[in-house]
Amino acid sequence: MGSAILESSQPLTASVRELRDDMDALGYSGASSGGDLAHVPLVLKGYNGWDTGVQVQNLGEEPVPVRITYRQSNGDGGPWTDSGVVPAHSAVTFYQPAHPELPAGFVGSAVVQAPEGSRIVAVVNEVHEQGAGMSYEGALDGSSTVSAPLLFKNVNGWNTGLQIQNVGPADAEVVVTYRATDGGGPWYEAAWIAPGSSFTFYQPASTVVPNGFVGSAVATSLNQQPLVGIVNEVNAALGVAMTYRAFADGAPVLSVPSLARRAEAGWSTGVQVQNLGTTTTTVSLHLRGPDGEEVHSAAESAPPGDSRTFYLPDMDGIADGWRGAGAIVSAPPQPLGAIINETRY
Image 1 (cartoon, rainbow, N blue to C red):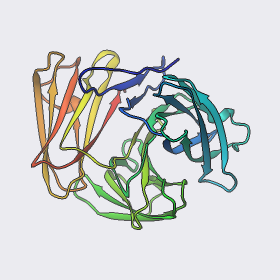
Image 2: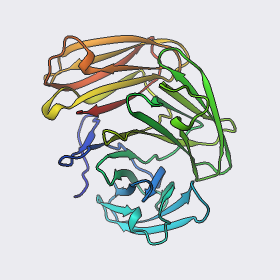
Image 3: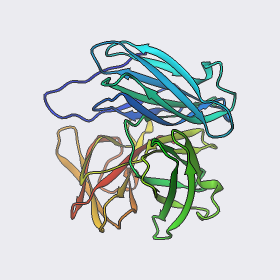
Image 4: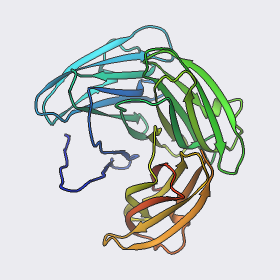
């Protein structure tokens, strides 16, 4: 177990797959830069079988001390702290079940802090005792609006929870706007979130989001406090889970380093793309093989805030066993956010 730093004379994107024999796999995106703060919306200790570990990597040339502050969202008490020294170019794991003061059943958030000018990044692994697992990247800063392209409420066994962390200095008044992929909505939920803390908008418990909901969400702080968010996607019956970080901003062209259609061991991918702009745009997915040549493309119209799904096993013109990369393009240009879900069931 360790860490890595990639260097190149050309711009890179990278994704990491963490494979476990006969268990759910985990994945996260590589970081292109670091900072002296990393915000973590969700950490767990023995909550319904879930535990987390926070991996902190130092991108700098010298060892740095780090301090983690935990705040509980499902009870009183705290905050609690943890600390350690991360060597240059290395990573250290802070495993929440090993923290003696965090209460059993803890659900909360964390802030990882290093001395000013440091360059740290963080990744959180969420693992269930029955084998499900997921990973997400800590955020270096926040935004008053964050967007999530894929949410579920009781859809083929899938459900989601949207965790929003307030990384600002004052209480945040947060409103979440939901839109369904079939054109339904919008629906709204709201909460006040204290500084450094997080709140879970759990779609199965929502009284406004309809059963069978598939769609997107935008979380906004009405008083302009910076937010960070993640979405956990869980299928308890299948024992699988996925997570991703909500987007603060986007770009009209996105790169996707890894896509598959029933590739080795049965892996397939779905691409969920959200229009983060202010006008309707056509979203196109262009698939490229290992030689860089385009092999297939597909396109759909997406109004502002809405998302569209490109599921490779349902796309004609791609053979089973295919694996490659892709590019996502909007026309007219609008900022996009996208996630990749990879499954093999």
